[in-house]
Image (cartoon, rainbow, N blue to C red; front, side, top):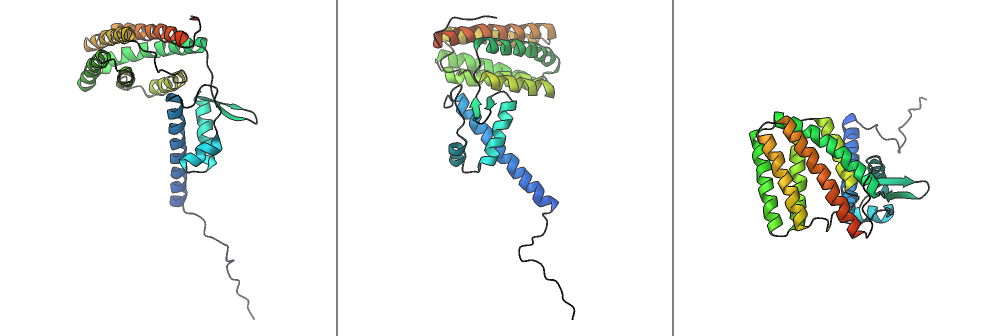
Length: 246
């Protein structure tokens, strides 16, 4: 008698390439969600510098397993927002004034390049958008709306970097901006600081509109370095510490 073997009841067919692709995409999406939420918590000040990431509580809050959350933490550690401590988990990085100053110096160098490239490549649409953002920042300053001014300021710089049309510059710049978020921005922009900053914005736009690469590069570099001075002075006052310039 021939005995025909039957499939084991627990045997399952191997996953197709499409199914594996869907699982990978879902995993990547969950990691991105976790990264965005941790970044938001840092930017909003809910996670202070040096705070430990409570993986269990955050995973429960997001309604997902700890796997994607841990991958997100690893990614943010590589980006410089978090740091991993042996057998203790992940913590929001603590950076001092010297490191912030170094980041500003590097940002200034990048934005000089961005200014030069934008003056050569800017479209009429991007130029119009930059001019509108400068006008909107003046309005926010007049209203005393610091939060609005800061949002518009971030958009202004994002448009500039995008208009430079250099993907590698964009990636490096985005990383620097994330690290600078470790210093909370709340309360760091007075009316005088906003006025000075937006005068510098206008000088940048004027150089770009004139299609002057050297002028745009100089205006961009000056703006970032002036911003560095304003930022460190305001941060020192908020933290009751002396300004420590490099």
